[in-house]
Length: 576
Figure 1 (cartoon, one colour):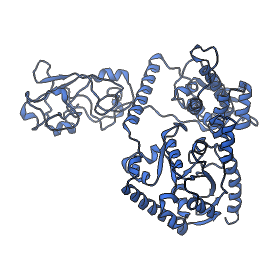
Figure 2 (cartoon, one colour):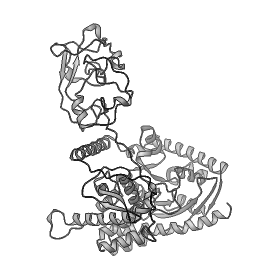
Figure 3 (cartoon, one colour):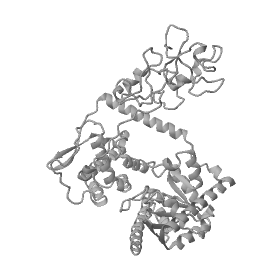
Figure 4 (tube, rainbow, N blue to C red):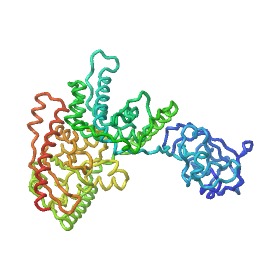
């Protein structure tokens, strides 16, 4: 690195310092190196250091020969054990990595790798230097090379929704058939339901292996229509590829749980499955297909087939990304320490925090908004006066990030200030609520349980929620799985069905609906409790599968949501 860098100035290097291999003060360090290891303390490649005379370095930087060897160097200084190492004091083999990971360029803050070469000092980087000094994935920088982002062409999506749905269903049908007949079995084997659900959920993502079929699609104009043309080779995933991915999400994403069930049961032919999913369930193929006017398309990309080298580079990047995720997941601790939650200090912190948030929510809702709530005594009664050991599950629509906890400001103040039994646990996205130590501290004491989006219904967060139900606690769920700003109700996720079906004591289920929480007029309607005890017993006696039980419960809640939505909107329209 350049001698004028911050590290070089701190450690006193002179501009005239150059590496001379024949001198004894040049030290080569060899370590076992894995280019996919992205940890900050991972071994680096073969590196060289120059040990200048004492007047060229500050004290305590270069050790004497009697001290530990340079093989124990690190980026961080720990007296008596480690050597300090910065970007100004180490030089890696950039040429090899540059060939492996070409990219657009180095940010201006990065200094060119000229330290120890005798070349004149380089200026700050500019776009014209992109080819000379590409920004690479090096163990020195610890970064993945940034891929250029491409966005879907929104105008093209209505033209290809129907055909994309048909292509996706055909692909999934063939994929599940291959999974059943894998390993040369004479008799098709029964698939695990979680594997089918995972396949369907990832089938619209071209970055995943399950969604690789999208990278072979090219959009072409034919007879006044926009058509999907399947290619034999994999192409670069640019804007048209992202357009197909978005169309797949809008056509299949809302019915993914129902599609997974149909694929798992394997009772329909391909044509009947396409009719059921694309015509009856998602309705994307109903009506006439919109015509494409001449010159209407503003973007028409050419399909670029990936070369073998590009495929290998793309696969390496995906492996690095997966490796990084695995390392991050293994390094992360479970945010909720169950043993700590039983301590008095944790309970006091939780009581104080929930009381503070609840009081703030009451002030915000009742002083700065106009709120009408109906049948709220049903929620209060089941929250406070339900029998001991009987759990409670509440479900509602999710229209904003403030739905929880603001809606709980509508509870009586004594309920908010006594959260031991009268305030809910809720499921929240781990990547949002538990991304930092401070957020983990805050939301864990606010009684939030982390769940990872895309990990399905058989993940640790759902297991912890079931454990809380078995203790007779109250769990609140947004069964749509995400904020929904659209007018239609999303297909509910089966996780809520699993909570109800697998609890030791079947919980009381209280659904409710709210309107216009993004505005100053708020209407909240609490529905009558739903009983599933007899349903669960009947399905167990009939030896129904767990999937069928979960789906039946989720469908019942979905139907009740539709009724509550109409009732709430009718009440809301009377005072707008």
